[in-house]
Image (cartoon, rainbow, N blue to C red; front, top):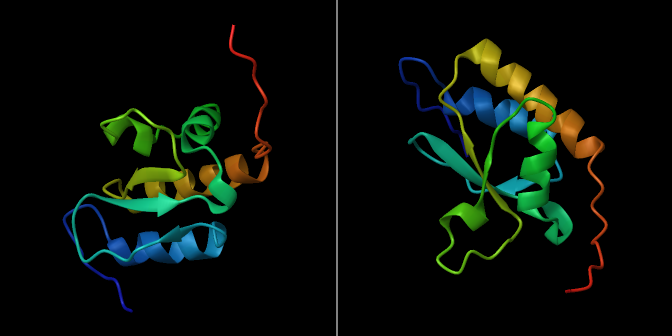
Length: 112
């Protein structure tokens, strides 16, 4: 599937190439346009926890929890691709670094 919708400041095809080369464990449904794409983290990793971890690497993301009527955490992230090519490339490199350093093990927590 070729993805290549171009706008004034963004190119979905460029985003897809970066995504597939840097975050090949993640999955997404190719889009034909728009401003963002939903991705799924592997292994039921917490998107909320990863979004917090990514922020420490300088990338701000929205987890699916922010869009869920039940406020439930899941493994989906919303990633915009509207930035300029250099900013987008840097963000994808930072996301890749964040993913490699993310502790995916579930945390057992007692409710107090």
